[in-house]
Length: 602
Image 1 (cartoon, rainbow, N blue to C red):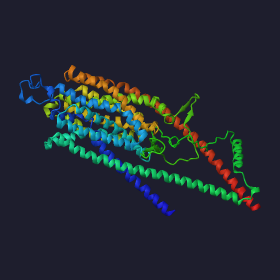
Image 2 (image 1 turned 135 degrees about the vertical axis):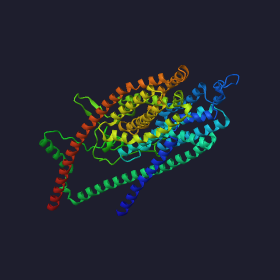
Image 3 (image 1 turned 180 degrees about the vertical axis):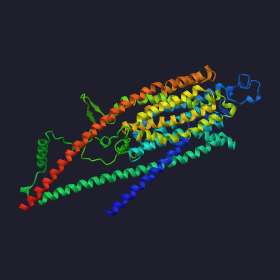
Image 4 (image 1 turned 120 degrees about the vertical axis):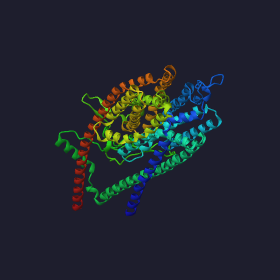
């Protein structure tokens, strides 16, 4: 027993170190690659310097349309080139969002390791195609390359949830999911870092991308190694818990058999009859029918028997942790789940009857289809679609919008500053955690904070052309993106079951792709129709924030409904568990006493 206890201590002390290493490498590839694509401004500058679609800026006679008699103007971008370069990013977002549900479905089927390998292929393929397009001047390859970058973005956002679910407690899960989503926001400085290297070393675009590709192998390779180690340890932990459970059951059977062998046949006690008599006495004494809760239904899986998270303050509850094993057992795919130890002798209720006698079933205990069609998820999808559409437009048009305010006169200083300040969002992570965990605001307050930050940023955009004032808007926008991704993706595991989270995240991104189609029209409106004036597009997207206030309020009502259900379930569970425990103890004491009397008589 001492040796087993020592091995068990070593095993549990190893798991945190492996998971910390996993989170570290996940954070590394998230900030360097997963979040790089939204920071489009520096990448557009590098593409312009590399001569991508520069031929669009010349007329049929070969004259530079930007020259206008000034030789110094040669080489600057024109509106036709700008539209194509911005289109690279928007098309990449559309492709990534369109295939996001399929990535989520694969995550639920094949697990996180398969998704990590797929994301790695997107990253390596995207960088490699950019290198080929630059070296051969085959510019249409950039469409494929940046489409892979879009898939990389949405695959990484999915991996943030998968990585968080590996943690042991609900608080750790929220922290990891929020941290990785914040790093997606901060990762927009990755292209700024590449641009800085290129300008300081005068290296070619291909050489800079080659270094970038080498770092990708290190980041994704380290994450893959520690994912496998984490899965192996979690599988060992599951097997050990199952072995301990079997040993405990075997010991109980041996004790019961020993007691039966000790007593003569004519004086054996039927313990079940004794329990029934105590049930009758309990009903007479309390005047209420006895509720039997010690029934284990085989139809319910471990996922459904887990402790249910309490909304708005879920720090004291447990949550599903799922992981993948590519060694298939019963089918072509396997999804393994692990939950904290729960008393197998009790069954947690999953619904309650309100005063109107209408039964309410918790969302996470419904079928996957009903979970994804619930009011809570539909509202979250609409909210995320509007917010992400605005976020994508601002990130994609930052270069052109700041140029219209005179940024070219400052050597692109403000577009680079806009990208660099995205890292400020890391400061907002503790504030976000405090809102959803320690304050009374909860997730409803976090959703409203997203609306407030988005409206403030929109007002700053519309109210002034002063670039120095716009720097304040850059910081507000960074916090806005931090709250948007951290809130929406950390909220999914709160009300969806672990087997449905992947599909839920994919559907969110897929729905956002349809709204992002309007960004193509808004880009044309700002560049061509209004001659690089983005006031009208920004006004439209700022006004779109107003309905989100009502949507967030409605989601708050749904959260309260779930919380009310959980409170009633907790009350019922505690009452019935106390009654059952007391009755069982009385039955055991009575049976032991009769066993002693029987042996004395013999």
